[in-house]
Image (cartoon, rainbow, N blue to C red):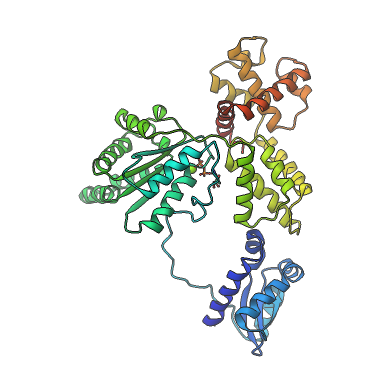
Length: 452
Ligand code: ADP
Ligand code: MG
């Protein structure tokens, strides 16, 4: 049986090249080989009747081909649904095969998809990319410490993992440690929390772990704010590594001056800082979508990619979310390629979901908080610039997030005319395209509201 399992795994590996990741995960991966009947028929159990039917209807020839290749030309196969499997096992007096017991592999630190190759370079991120690449090639020399800085969902973690993957491949002897700020904090707190007599040992071990290395990566350092003990520990870790010429890489969605850390670290980070990453322009967005579709084996019409790239997404994670949503929708509908029709349907549901969680009141409140103005002012008549712009932003966000008629939005803003609402929407949409600062503001407020 072990042998069959191993061969089946090879069939799966092959199938993965023929079908989309989603199809693979939803249908193919869940097949379980039962046995080889009469020396020439591979018996496969599907988890449901629809799984059986879908595979037979859509993927049978590919499956056939892969099985031939691995088991031999003579091998046939039969798929049983869950009821049939039960019956089959009863009749053949077998118990279902046990779960495969692979020894758990040590989990790699880095996401293998987050490589330099898979990172699309454009105007918005070329400096950060170049710096990250230089650090990967010559750690501890050029940019040390390296700060990768951008708003949320714009590629910081991706670049950090890319450095990690690169080092793993080309400098396998270096000791590289990657942690999120949260993990760093939790491990430190844990080391403090152990009983008195072993406490010193635990703290010592923690320090060994973080100081006796060549490259330290801390993701999302901004979360260290107000964690005083961790801040201090980080300060010492930083200094020790820095003094010994070890590479430190940090990501942050705040500018160095706004991160709550020691001034000395702040100024060192600012020295290393080249430029932050911004929201990419249309062409780069399009290239990212194409890359992503290729990586995930989504089959999607170019028209759909174009449609998604044109939407005023303010971060890439959000944009990728839209892509996988459309692809998922098409797969569920049993299609092999996603079309505009699927895109419309997929986004229609999106709108609905948002409406339940987010209200115009929430949005207005968040915008007021952001600009430090009152709700009375934002919905009122004042025409000074410091009020007008937040007002337009709030209008834009309400229109963009909720499916409300313009007249209704006008009413919320003190009975304004619907053309005024339309004007605000267009103005901000335009600005997002031209002005990275506006895009970043919208991005920040959306993140606060958890609008994806
Ligand atoms: P951050 O850490 O800044 O919040 P991530 O690194 O998690 O953002 O990026 C969010 C998503 O966007 C990831 O799936 C990442 O692969 C993708 N992404 C961001 N920038 C690029 C790029 N330039 N090319 C390809 N994919 C990108
Ligand atoms: Mg990140």
